[in-house]
Image (cartoon, rainbow, N blue to C red):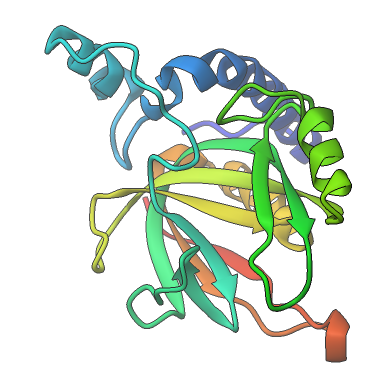
Length: 226
């Protein structure tokens, strides 16, 4: 594979590709088209679009959202499902990247002992699940005496390779503290001459950063094979 002449050329190409991908994701969010991506070692032409295949079987108007596939997070120093179950050894997983999008998590917090109200919004204006205006939902929470908090995340979808979730579609919720690491991984992988969507990526638990209440455990990303 021929490499661009300079690192800046590569970075410019990555930025252009991500902008194009963002436009595609905006369309894909309502019909699940973002699920059609190349697996490691295959070309886009060789990859079956699952939504088209399902439509041919009579499964149409599928509602694909953040509840459709397991969401993985780092919690208490382990990779877990958002419900709390540790994935395998909790230290690392391997998967093939399919899609990346930004989302916002709104939380209505009563106290530490009570589970918060949760709502996701990709455009920061409408709630993904219901289409309601974010302001309507958060105003209701405030009227109920809840404190409203919002955090931005990247959601990276992919197909697992190995482990207990082998070949399952998963989505990794990447907090702001790890977004720079992920974007740096995309750039360095591309500079090395690889398509990030056509290699196996290892996601692991990084070393804890900070101390006390401000301590956090970031994600770490490495290319393991093409």
